[in-house]
Length: 191
Image (cartoon, rainbow, N blue to C red; front, side, top):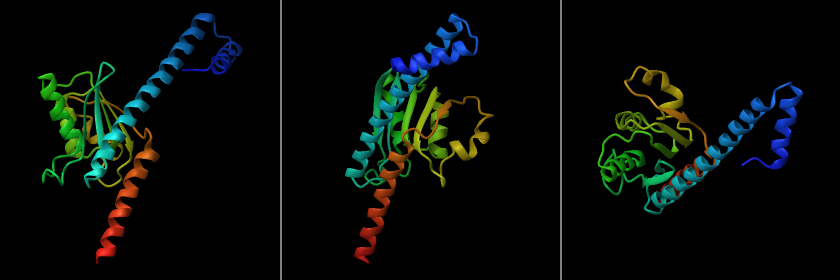
């Protein structure tokens, strides 16, 4: 939410540009809703980070995800490729499966998926099939991430979704970097 000082600053700027009171009110409402949306996105991403901690606890790559519908978390999952011996058991896939079963519908229309790492092609394909409305991800994946590097390939699909990238990116990336650094250290000690 905007502080009184920020609100007054916006109003002063708007008045100095000659905007009338109605336009100023719209600017304030738009800015306020953006700030509130960012606060909600941050909260849900922190929930995804909590799921990532569970993955790490079980020796999995620490990627977590949550699915939100009507401002309610309807599911949470984390990577389980090792524990399930399943290369497709990414957090996003498990989450979409869980949510579809819970809602008794394979279409997850109007939902937002929050995940700590930029999704791979397989996961993006599943999101397209599930018809999610929006994706929010944290850390960028320069090797397998498909959103920032190859989004243009996906634009011709029968369904696409909006996305917000880089939310809490540093925190999400640091979690992954620490995990892999620890893995490399343990491998070197054993060898």
